[in-house]
Image (cartoon, rainbow over all chains, first blue to last red; front, top):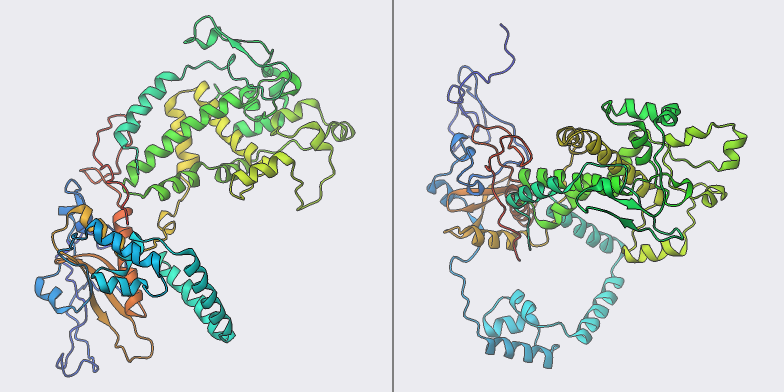
Length: 180
Length: 370
């Protein structure tokens, strides 16, 4: 019987091969690839955009049969440690801001928002700028003044630059919608 | 935000089923602007058969309904069971509140809407228990909102009755033809000369647009949607819950809904950190660079992953570190929100209205506050 699928084979029978073995030295001849493929089938899926519909194991509830049945791609701690960190959330976030400090921040920002900018306040009290934005209200006069300044600046830009800025905004929206 | 759990849904269904009494002839009447005020009296409030209305309405005789080719064709096209009478089908297409005294589709519409809301909500809550509230509401709208329902009605081949009495007379159109058409226009508006692509709005409609934040739903769309709901309501009154459920499954829930395209995040990384707190992850969230083509290459590509300890939550590809990081966070969030449970034997989950239903899925934890 002719089979056009390999589903009857267990996944151990078809070895996963992330990259073909090189005939030459892997380190010195990275750019001189002479693949030496093993006999038989290998599982080497093509590079593709990650699927948003597959649930990672950490998000699977314990009752879900897929948490044990499916073989998930696992990483050893060495492998993970080998990848450089780009961003990390703080393990121990502090929640030691008292109402007095918040009141002081609010008082400073409302009294002279031109001098006490968000970044300056954040630095002074050792909090994040977003914390300052959440706890204080925008000074409408200052906001109008700033947006007027920004608008004037934007209008002085050449057309190409204005277009590029708009396109950049649109591209970021694509990231946030998981579109390409 | 509050989220209806699937258990609560099951309870609501039981109450709902017991509250519907199958009687069509008396109470399905509505009069909004006729001169005599509509009043219903009854001997026993639990028996719809004893309900009496002060406005006399009658139902289309079956013999007249049978003469309308459009009605017979629609009945056959939708493959409705024999028990579904043509007169009810004609009633489902009648939106008129005043003329002729024929029963209109107000009651059938309400019944159909309740059935639809139940089955669509039950399906979505079981299939995607973690959807954020706004996406869930949008998904409900995408299945049973006015726009999709009206396009379903159009695809069923329902025709609106737009010809005036004079035009019908001149065309020698038999009187029973209109009983197979969607009747929602008043005689005066049928006589108006219409320009293609130009819609003249009444004062009421303009104020409605203001209430709906600038959204305008043409009365034709409303009428089509109501007729679809009424046909579903009519199916329930003539047959049983199972047949109606199958009909809704075939015509409404079978439509492809690309939920993964309905998301737009504002602060994905922050949302993911908060989600990690909510799920009680011990390790901090880390975005790590998995691979790159080389920063000085002509079109650099970066692949990053969001990790908790050694567990990868999501992966993103981008032409800058910022892009790949954002995409990785979005990918992780979508992986969480689009989770769809399966039963212990790997089959699709049963919904509460299915026979032999056992709660196997999950109840979502609710939205994440950023």
